[in-house]
Image (cartoon, rainbow, N blue to C red; front, top):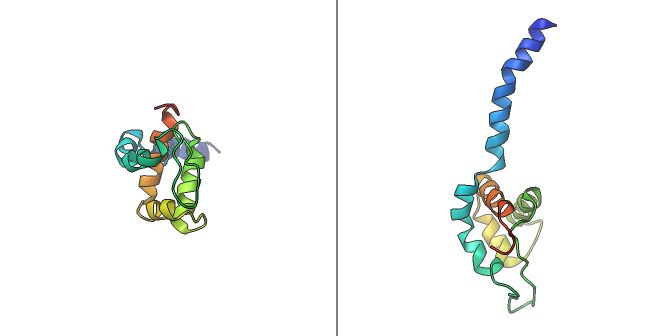
Length: 108
């Protein structure tokens, strides 16, 4: 029992580091999200066809952003512009962008 407990306690710091790494880096995300603001940073912006309201994404939930971008990347969501954006992102890019966007106010 003592050996097993010591083993688990020895692994705990490594698991915490891994958990932090998988969340994404908001500093890197700020740089990578530059193109996102071209549409999502304009109040009331709509694309030409089909007429689709572009949502503000600042302050959105981290997990939601990761899921949405991953689905655009895989083709599970099919908005042409967002699919093209998602296909160009690595999983690390997606996590970084989500970390940044979820950390800011929607008015930024």
